[in-house]
Image (tube, rainbow, N blue to C red; front, top):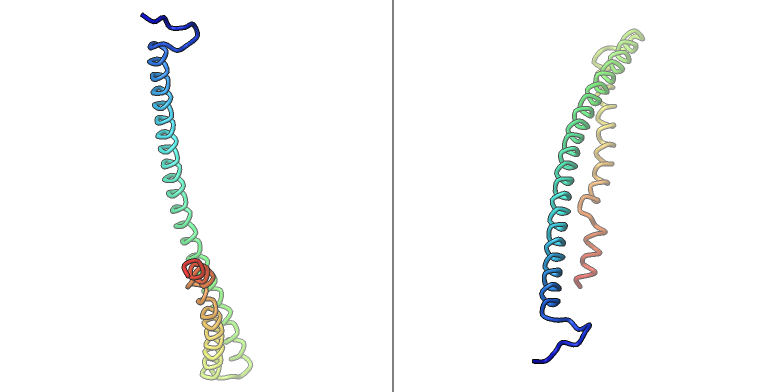
Length: 133
């Protein structure tokens, strides 16, 4: 029978190495699974927090809009009362207020229409067309 030279791996050493590799692979798999689970939990918690914050912001925005509209109504009523005190008739005052509001609405809609072109993501679309062609 051939003798194994000292310092060279024997059959027992190969088995121990295989067990060590298996244990390391198992540890790596467990660590990866734990990390993925933690990441998913964090993503879920952040998504819930973002949803709650979004609802809170929406509620605050609605309340702010109500406060602004209420304040605007009082400003318009005060202006109308001053105009009546100055001798103008209610129909003239109502027509002036309506005209002013139509002009404001037209300017706001014109601005919104200008911004709407960004909703189509033109720079991204151009970049993607450039890559594909």
